[in-house]
Length: 344
Image (cartoon, rainbow, N blue to C red; front, side, top):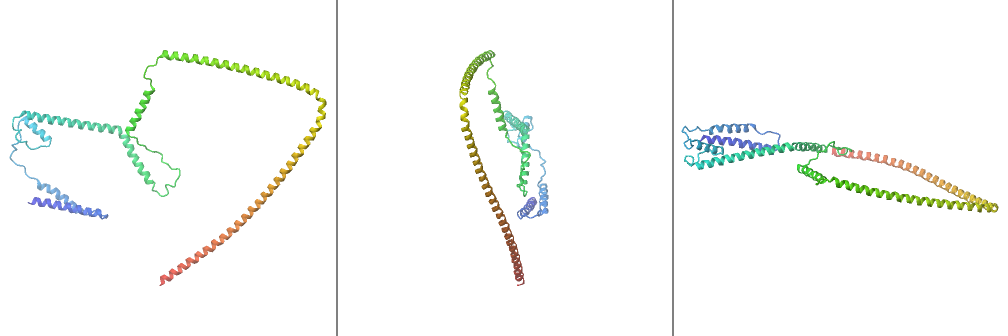
């Protein structure tokens, strides 16, 4: 029939247009294919649907019931996707089957609708709770891609002291819940599980205060005893010093006559010491002069080295000039050779 011919032509145009498009894609060309073929394929595909239309029969369908309960059951079957009459059960008077079908479809419909509502509610709640995090994560990805693109700029990594102003960190909801639970557990451990007995606490405070008072009194008594002992020792030392000083004064009064005789050997000793110090000072001066001479010799050697370095610099510069002249001569020779080769 001519219906099949129309279908085949539409299919052929669509197939040729798709092959043409694949050839364009695989060849990596800048063209867009042949739009005429694709437009004709779409037009024929739409027009073929018109040829497939058939007139409705004029005779009424006799398989569908006309009673209320039976019509409801068939309508429920329509809702389930069954559009043809189901054998002869709907034409019979089997009301148990009708009730069973009604209950089945109603219950399943209610359950599916409730499940759908629950899923929608869960999705809404989840989106309401986590949309901030999702938005931040998407922004993080955009910033990450922009920063990674900037790394390919030449010389970008050579800049020192650069760092992004903001850094985004993602934390899943499970980690946040764990953190909250840990903080709640710590607060629960910190709070006392039993009420505090005020009388016991007061008795404990009184006992601790009495202990502190006793310990402080003991410490003060010990400090006083130690200070008294120190004062006694100091007094004894002072008394001994005074006794010794009185004895020394008596002995000095006895030895005044013999002190004149001891003055002369002391003067001779002082003169010897002065002479020894003068000799040491002369030796130090000689050592300093020797150090100065060595320093002057080192300075002269350094100056000689500087002169030698300058001479070496002049020699190196002369060599560099000669090398440059030789390079120029080599370049001229190469140009001449190339000119000869081009002529040949």
